[in-house]
Amino acid sequence: MVSTTSRRMIGRVSFPRPFLEASPATRWLRLVLLISTLLGMLCCLPLWLNNRAYPLAPLIPGIPVLPAPFDQWLLAFVLLSLVSALWFYRLGVSFFLLATLFLYLGDQNRGQPWLYLYWVLLLLSLWPGERGVAAMRVAISASYFWAGVQKLNPLFFKAIPGWFVQPMQQWGSPDWLGESLRLAVAGAPFVEIGIAIGVWFGITRRWALAAVIILHLVSLLLLGPLGHNVNLVIWPWNLAMIALMLALFWRADAQVGVAECWRALKPARGLQLVLALFCLLPLLGYRGWWSSYFSFSLYSANTARADIYLSGRYQERLSPGLQRFVEPVPNFDPAFQKPYSFAHLKWAVAELGVPGVPEPGAFAAVFRMFSQSANTEQDCHMIMASRDGRVWLFGPGQNSPKSIGP
Image (tube, rainbow, N blue to C red):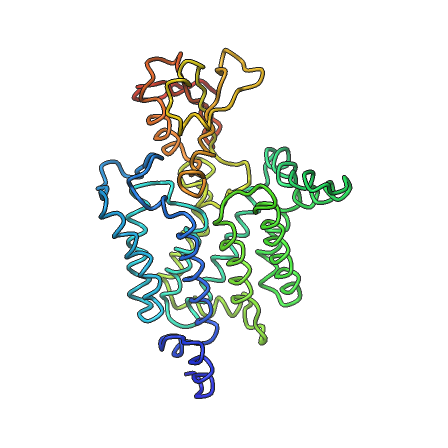
């Protein structure tokens, strides 16, 4: 129970009654989660609607798709459920979890990494008391661990650090500073794994939390409007990660270690199963059997990739809205490429507010829409490399792609 003095102080900032009945740690965790999720969804409202230019990529074929305006009403209820959770936490969060699961089944692109993490944390928060909080600690620690592990691949070290620090050249930063930061970014996998482990031990916890703050603030600097200007979602997401890690692990009594966590989780078999699935399913991602984003592979260069090529003649037949994302291919190879490429990732950000998910099904949906006016592969084609190393050729109107290696 919260003391009378605490009730009065919190009441001055108009917190609803359910927040007074929870412990301070639980209260602020819930508040951070609800606000972060709400802001994230507000940054990409078109993603959640069905009447849009960017195609839907259903995870389950034949799942019902709500027409307008019913899709707008459902979105409104989803957003309101996050607000109503301040008063009716379990009811509001339960509706949000079920509704967003339905929306995700209708479009894989809604399976964004930030929403997936929030979704799981909200689910875990429904367990009462210290059990739910302990489970959230395990889950968020696992997300850092997998984010680091996913980056331990040659493509990351070759491409991502240099790309990440490119904005520093535009700022006129000295070469030594840019090179130092590039080396620091190359060490990100080890930093993230270190954070995942370090927060569990008192001797390293402060250093790990300091690394969290630096990691996300640097990400905001380089990915925000002054840098790559990726999308608005990175703001609530990076700030939320700092707030969540501090709320979960910064405790004056330091009772957040492995032993305390195990004691809290030991009686909850169902909770242990949920955590085991969350922590182990990323292993399936290496074979393409689990979503790359659900495996925390963002900015790892360890995802499926797709390139859409088109001829100059087909470019002229595109709508003006699509033509602005057509780019020339320098020194193109006629055996595999065409003179132009379609920047479908930029199109996704422009239409949805977030990148499309790097999954074969989502790429196939984009190409089906893009090639609907094409007659043959002379007009356009798509080459996709799946995460397990296979390469596929997609042509207009083909029911299945051709394997072209290895």
